[in-house]
Each structure stands twice: as C-alpha cells, then as structure tokens.
Amino acid sequence: MNGISGNVDLNRTGKNYPVIIKNAGKNGFKPTGNVLDTDGFHKGDKGLGVYFLKRGLIASGYKLDDNDVFGDGTEKAVNDILGKSGYARNGIAGKGFARKFIK
Image 1 (cartoon, rainbow, N blue to C red):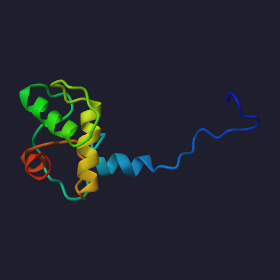
Image 2 (tube, rainbow, N blue to C red):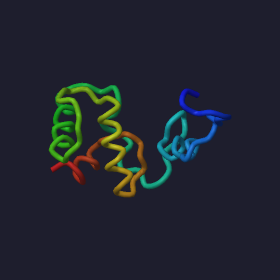
Image 3 (cartoon, one colour):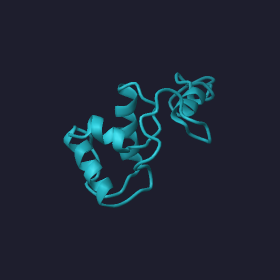
C-alpha cells in the first residue's frame, strides 16, 4: 500500500458489516427492529411524490439533488432518520415516515 512500509491487513474494519447488512434488510434479509413502513417510496422510484419527499428532506438539512429520483443519497437520508428514531433502516419512506418526519 502506497505510503505505508511493512505489512498491511486489508481484511479488517471497525464496522460489523454482516450485522449492518442484516439489520438494514439488505441481501435478502428481513430488517430487524421496529419497521415503520413496508410499502412506500424506495430506491429506484421516480415521480412527483419522490420529489416532494426529497424537498422535505432538503428542508430538514439533507444535501440531496433537487430532482424526482430516489437514489443512494435519498436512501441514506431516509435510513438516517429511521435509525436515529429507533426504526429499522429499511430504506422505505411510506405513509408512516411522512406522518412522523416530513413537515
């Protein structure tokens, strides 16, 4: 590895990614914890509803593109809000999410 002399172990991390992946409901796992919504906007969605969701997230201080695409940044913002509020980080912004977090 450039800038480091000696051996470097690239197989170590400070995060427990298997647990993070399972808790988020990724790779076929069901999310753990209190699931707020099982239906709603999620990554890959587009349209006016996503645009208004993103406008609410932007108004809350999240730095997102001003468009109608639910991409990586929107998923990260939704999961951040869900996780901070004690809900499973499943990347879904449905009616429950809108009622609780979008003002």
